[in-house]
Amino acid sequence: MRHSIALAVTEGMPIFDLAVPCHVFGTDRPEVPDDWYDLRVCAIGPSGGQAGGPVATRSWFAAHTPYGAAELVSADTVIVPASADVRGDPPGELIDALREAHGRGARIVSLCSGAFTLAATGLLDGRTAATHWMYAALFAERYPAVRLDPSVLYVDHGDVLTGAGSTACIDVCLHLVREDFGSEAANTVARQLVAPAHRPGGQAQYIEAPLPERADDSLAPLLHWATEHLAEPLTLADLAHHAHTSPRTLARRFEATTGTTPLRWLRAQRIARARALLEGGDLPMDRLAELCGLGTAANLRRHFTRAVGVPPHDYRRAFRARESAAPATV
Image (cartoon, rainbow, N blue to C red; front, top):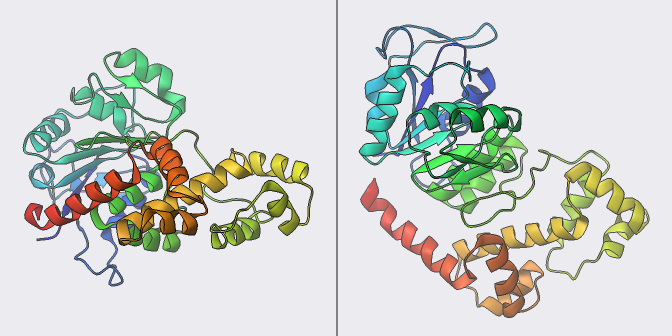
């Protein structure tokens, strides 16, 4: 049996939040060795959660689907896209279905202002959550029991995930692919989307600073070159030399484009490379550190633990345990 994902569609929801998970999870991917997801779009509307009728989304589109609340409750993962009305109450049948799905062990995920719907279930009480920054004040006012962090891209508590707005939907979906199928599958999907497979964050996926989906054309060749030379001891001067500019000019352009400094960006890429190598092999830590450009095992341990929240050995062990347990959960 494939991992089932139910996407809750409600009246007036933004089309982008519907399109991203449909593209990521609903597209056949023969290049991924395991069976891909079983995606079901579930209509939750005025019909009281009954399947069969069209649900009007935003901007001329309507979702026609044979699935409704019953399929949502029985899914392995339930995704709640953005709400059409963050000041109103979510549909009662959706709240009931989410509580029931979570009670039977489903993973519940909200995108953008879908956090309002998820908060209405009570599942976020006492937890940290993410939503679009422009709704931060309203969210805090409506749901004071939830600790909102408007600066992050997404927060993963294992059973409940919340994502920020717009393009953070892509980050959340790629994170789910990474958790379910590993970094290689996430990298494959990210390349097809022309998006970063992973943006830096801690163990609970608290992303420190949102970055744009892509650098401007002037920096793209440099970033591509740098990712191909992560094993080398790159400095700001090295990057500036390759970009045919001065270190000061590069630093200014880099931060304006990516929201971070060149060396912080390099460190994030090296941590991401380390994660992929830890997940995909048994390299000794010294060799793995060299390939990532972190020099020594001690340096790898220090930077990896600071960024991810656990030491590299523990991360590898936890990832292997998750992989070995996966067939039993299917």
